[in-house]
Amino acid sequence: MNDNILDQKWSAGSLLRFAFPTIVMMIFMGLYTIVDTIFVAQFVNTDALSSINIVCPVINVTVGLGTMIATGGNAIVSRKMGAGESQEAKEDFTLLIITGAVIGFLILSCGTIWIDKIIYALGASDLLFPYCKDYLMTLLLFIPANVLQTLFSNLFVTAGKPEVGFGLSVLAGVANIILDYVFIALCGLGIQGAALGTGFGYLIPTVVGLAYFSRSKGTLSFTRPKLKWAVIKESCFNGSSEMVSQLATAITTFLFNNTMMDLLGENGVAAITIIIYSQFLLNTLYIGYSMGIAPVIGFIYGNKNNVQQKKVFKISMGFIAAASVLIFSVSMFGGSYIVRLFAEDTSEVYQIAANGFTIFSVSFLFCGLNNFTSAMFTALSNGKLSAVLSFLRTFGLLAGGILLLPRILGITGVWLAVPFAEGIMFVVSVLCLIHFAK
Image (cartoon, rainbow, N blue to C red; front, side, top):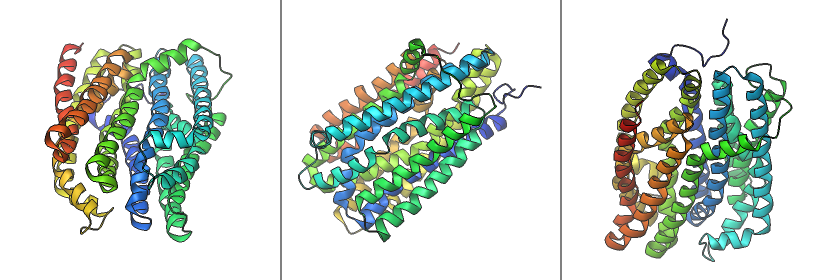
């Protein structure tokens, strides 16, 4: 009897059931990410809200490194599982977890030493600096846990236990929401309370993941690792598109912040913060699906089942198309309600963000396919193409749009930058899918 859940004949129903826990997991991650900003905006002020976005590139880089190792390593581990090399898969899995922990502690050390220089380099004004330092200094303490919970979120799926990752994400999200209220609203810790709530949210999946894989007798568990630089190198290379994506997010967030600071000051930065965090939440449906089925694609690729691979691809295209229309509709018609969670509708921040949401919403018609295409090529161990696509989408098109369009169209150009980049990238993604159809 085959006890590997990845080894089955996939239908639309079974594929969506398999991906569902990861989708919901990502939605909860999006919710407990955005809840920080809502509590900070409501119980502190919009300057503190702006400060979260100023230091956000540090978190982007951290998540990028974790996701790079997780997705790149995921392709290796699932491929070896598909080829029947279970012991090697466990050794590589353990090595990747250790690598993630080392990276986390290096970021903690370097960030603590150079925190003032980092904050000013990210564009903080003197008004925002104290908020930035309070938030980042606290959050740095939890950076190793952030990297590890990113790894476990991906690798629970590879281990055939997506429901465990789902449950932990729900628990972490609920804990973060409760702790945000306790630390910010009840204890009056301000922006430090937001960082503490987020940090304890990171710890829950990390601690449970370490305990689970230490005792697991299933398809994946900790074992004595072998130091294989080739595995680490391949994981980093194969997952480089995800690192490129997060690094690009860090750079484009920096560019957005500086552009809005020049155009509209701290209120402009608060408005773009609302848009960026709302975008992440709305994108979690695509990201969760792409993450959820990546092990399926990698496993099928490993055992060379081309019929199943094409079937999974066809189902995925239908899901992405439906999800894109749904998210666009929610964003277009519900954007003003989302903004109202952060700012009073009589405030300048609300007016700036609500006006921008209408233009920005067009991007959701395109970004679903773009996310899936990059994730699919990563799962197929074609990290080079995936990295090129991510680089073009973010560094090339989005950064270029932010630098160019506001010079021509002012504030409207800021809101058009993302639809501009995603629309062009949509065409590129379609051409790549056609060209690499085999």
